[in-house]
Length: 402
Ligand SMILES: Cc1cc2nc3c(=O)[nH]c(=O)nc-3n(C[C@H](O)[C@H](O)[C@H](O)COP(=O)(O)OP(=O)(O)OC[C@H]3O[C@@H](n4cnc5c(N)ncnc54)[C@H](O)[C@@H]3O)c2cc1C
Image 1 (tube, rainbow, N blue to C red):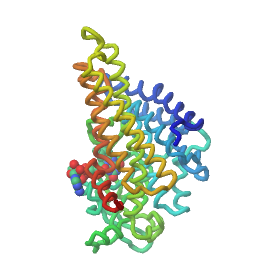
Image 2 (image 1 turned 90 degrees about the horizontal axis):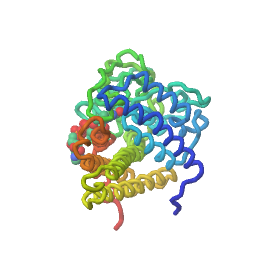
Image 3 (image 1 turned 135 degrees about the vertical axis):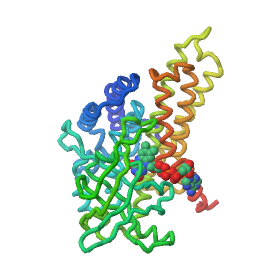
Image 4 (image 1 turned 45 degrees about the horizontal axis):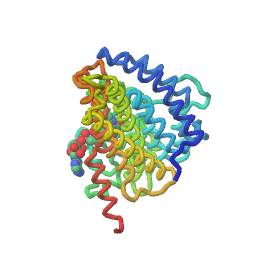
């Protein structure tokens, strides 16, 4: 076991860290300390710069225009650094990756060639990449994925989609929407519903596709979130991922495969927030004097010791799950869920402690730690709530031989 970084890992880490310090954190501070939204044009500039540095497409195969970096530890390093700068901006930069992962996990080779291309930047240009949205959640179905009611019905050479998707990141601004829908109107049992699920590519501008305005949130403020409505959306049969008849065994396996892997990235983002909160709390505890620097009060230093230990533990879980995914070692104990569950929980705890260490200043918008608490909380909710992660871990454990 070697915990040192390779030269390539170090280079990518330094690139992401420099970018986060010089571009992401200052932009967030400039606007959020004044309680303002970051203008879309300023966010576009950050995306272009990140794209030019290849921080957005490094993991795509070279054949699709990416850098072909398969090392998942690099993905963890980059993600943690970007989220350290500001989680909302990081989500805005990276959310299309979920769409790309879905195409990669469920698409045929032809579909990957057709739809992955615009997500990459082989010529290192300062341009906006293609934007994607992954549409799974619905107003009436979140954790219970199989309860979704968006339908996809075959009519000759087309699929016709109807339904409403909820809380969709990049809704309204995406070029491509991956819509998970039920193809079997008669499906009732769990296996039938799982087999009937399909994932469909709907391109921006398709008749019948619309989205609400950006929903108002407590955290990850730079990222947009909308409802997405599909009203008699007709798409060619070729737009079903996995081919006209979909994936063998149904779409649920593809959805799980997509989320199992992206969960590791979600864990790395939560870790970035936790580390940001720790860094600010440590610096503050050293310089804030109440008779003596407050770090010398055991109650304060123990909070920092807890934060540090939990961050290190979360990072190890995250890196291990990343390593397993990269080496195709199957998760046997829900390792992806363990990482996502633990990292998001400790991120919330780290932010609460950071606010406490800052005293009254921690409650002011001029300081970051209160905002980061709101950012951290959503990590316990999206891509499977903490409760669902525990269900998943328990499901794996029930199959482990003792
Ligand atoms: C900012 C934001 C962005 C998002 N972006 C996207 C996106 O791009 N695409 C997308 O598809 N979705 C997205 N989501 C949706 C997110 O994944 C869901 O909110 C999440 O899966 C929870 O679903 P829900 O909100 O319907 O909660 P519910 O499923 O209704 O859960 C409510 C509560 O009940 C608990 N619960 C539910 N079922 C169980 C169970 N079986 N066992 C134990 N407890 C249970 C939950 O843990 C939770 O505490 C986003 C959400 C947010 C907040």
